[in-house]
Image (cartoon, rainbow, N blue to C red; front, side, top):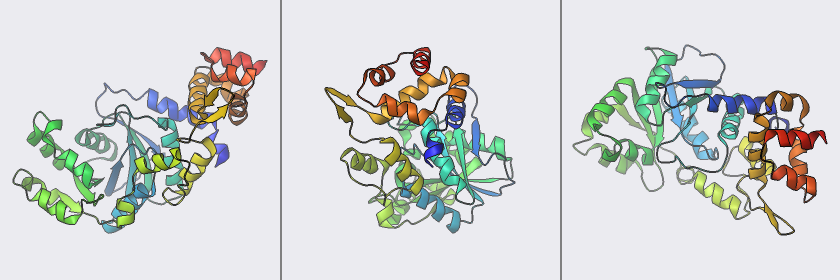
Amino acid sequence: MEQTIYDLKQLFALHEAVETLDLAAPPALRLLYPEAVSPFRRVGILCGSFNPLTLAHTELAERARETYQLDCVFFTLAKVTVDKERVTGLGLEDRLLLLSLYAQRHDRTGVALVNRGLYFEQAQAFRSLLGAEAELNFVVGMDKLLQILDLRYYQDRGAVLCQLFILSSLIVANRGDMAQEEFHQLLDQPENRPYRSHVRFCPLPMTIADLSATAVRNSLAAGKAVDETVPAETASFLAETHAFAPPLRSDAEAIDVYAARLALLELLYTVRSWAEQEVDFRRLLQIALIPSEKGRALRHSATGAAVKELVRS
């Protein structure tokens, strides 16, 4: 696991996948795991920001897959997520890395990157990849169902929802205080009744339904353990990279360990070929965190060429 966290070739490939996915292009996706598409008949699509991946995400995927006999559930990350355009935290390449590591250990699990935040456009992208015969099911929480049915996201709500439900259905789980009773009340409203046959309920244990990535981030910021709320891949990554943790104090400087990782990755990507051959990324980051002249120089480098020169020296 530790070696993978610092594998520049893999991290750069994920970074490239994100950078080259055109937001202005028609709805499209990049399949990151598995590498080849199988002839899936019933597919689940669990889209989120995964900042970070939690047991709520993984339990929801497993429950939906087993309850509705899905051939595969794709953890799907949008390059830009509706209502979360300014999300900070884990870099997209690190989120995709964690999703891929989890998927590799779990059968009937995939990972995809999409260039759209709206579900009906994501459905178009999956339909283009999987073909007309695949049954698409978005796996969501009650909070997301409220968003999907919210008038303020649409100029023509009826037309968009009609298109969404022609292409796909919804599998909805309880979320916090919003459980099955609220689910039925929402879908019994006159404006929502036309879509009732396309929306199904999937109950989750309350201990999982109440879990959020925000709560995990807050616990880490407070220096608390989160191992019981995240899968093993996430726990190992967070412990190694100190993402969301309080900064290290060095003399008069506060060093954000994870921010240093992101900054160096961005700079090394500009000298990608050299970095893949010559740089031990883990060792470089260790040096960058040392309160020394070279450490400060690495932390405050403005270009990949400057990092290259420091490594050579």
